[in-house]
Length: 137
Image (cartoon, rainbow, N blue to C red; front, side, top):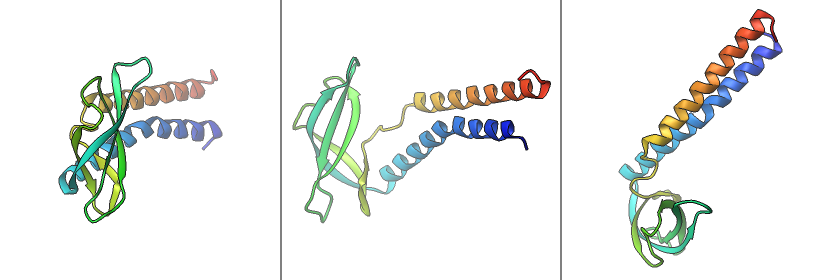
């Protein structure tokens, strides 16, 4: 294998990385929602995302049999939550830092975005490989 082929294989792998991360996150959220424990979390901070139509909401909760807060954040439509609001949070009892809310990573847009990136990178690698094989590069 030539150096250029190794580079192209590396690029193809990097192209699939966003899709793999999205799939991993979606599966993790599904697992937390089905096997995790439920807690009430309090919204303690809200910040408008810079030049955007979404709020970044930070929440905190105390896991069962614990004395310290665990925190998390979510992105949501402007005005959906106010400071002091309570929301349901699901978490893994063995690792409360792994927590989520209903609806996280549910949008098919993320998945399609990852698929489009992977397909574009794969096509680009294919075309570059054709050019190299033809001796144009």
